Image (cartoon, rainbow, N blue to C red; front, side, top):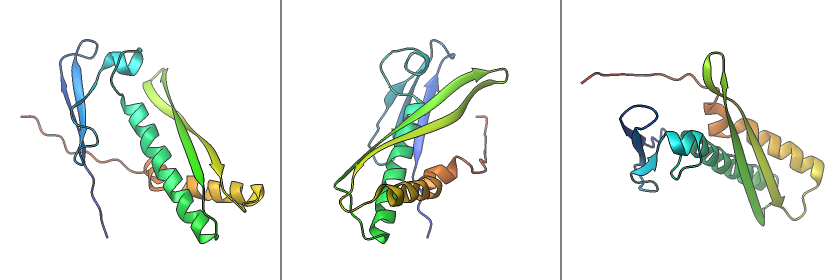
Length: 142
């Protein structure tokens, strides 16, 4: 089974003064603004790093829910924050790290088991795997 989901971006102008929007096919984001200010300064709008963080946090938390269920456990509540680090190096900008911070209330769970299941979810969630994936590109000049 293959499920395809679509996100898109539109950009006009140069890097610093240009403006862009991001959208998702589901409509969760529709022409949501992003730009230099929202990425590198404190201006309103979104940025790719926080979108990656939200995707990773959501994917990891759902994966952990599945793994907990397989172990006979159900979470009352799990809250995951993904901190995505963007840094400038000699070869330009990169994302060298994502830190997942999880706070969970899981009745009947022992800490050692919880740590093991959380690590399994971190390694196995599709977004974690994506961040190790081959990336392909088709580019067309019109």
